Length: 352
Ligand code: HPA
Ligand code: ZN
Image 1: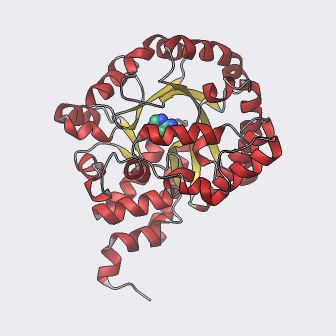
Image 2: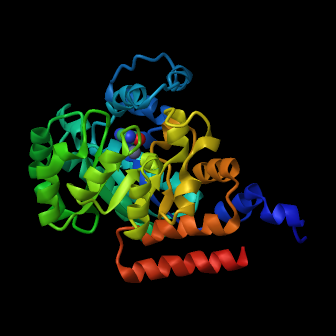
Image 3: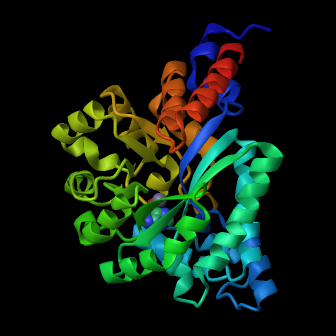
């Protein structure tokens, strides 16, 4: 029954034996990016939306990306099927079910309100649907979650400010769930500094702050996100290795990075997973986490992301433990819940 020494130390064995069932946090997932092609077609039919694709297969075939923008064009088109509270409920419930199968026990989920308000869908509608699914998951399965309202950086700061003002009643109504703001969409040419005022308002309100930075953009964008927006975590951040002083800073201040390996290879940030900077950052003491970003588009949920990067970078058991623990350390939860979740991880790890 006991594994051979080579099995015991190989990353794939570690992944299959411990990771698949280990309790995990997922801190970087866009709800719109969890829309599987089958659900896109089902919602399109329910809402009378005509899609420019003949079939689920034709849509899936279009998922051949060359960079971030080529993905975003398809991702925003797919999100157009989300119209009613029921739609937002259904996509959220489907994500929770799939994430739970990978051991996720706590998720911090982005949504892009401007993608929907531009089509006349209200923030009330989005929140009502997502909250119903998340409250049910919490009560039924003990699945804990937060929502992070993410501004689209290719739009103006005034547009973000308008969105923020419109969301104020929702921050009041869902204080347990809607706890932060983020920044996503086309990075190059849209530095964090463009959103200084709206992040200052969110900071004054005591919201948690995150921003995508250093995915396609330079390390300078990560410095800006830290210095100007004063974010608590960086989403992606994989280009930070180009700036040794930045790596030192991230490690010293224990700024967590929400890394998404399959996203990075699908969007050609790295030509091959073996070029991924995750291990370099981990070795330097940076608090890296592993997440799925837009799993319906990038070919895998959180376990597939762990497996791909563990295999390519030869991560050992201790490194995998550190990454998963970093996820709980970096979660926007209270200290009691953090201690409980880490104890669950440790109990699993010792017997697995
Ligand atoms: N980067 C920027 N914007 C996004 C992403 C991403 O990886 N996914 C969804 N919106
Ligand atoms: Zn993202």
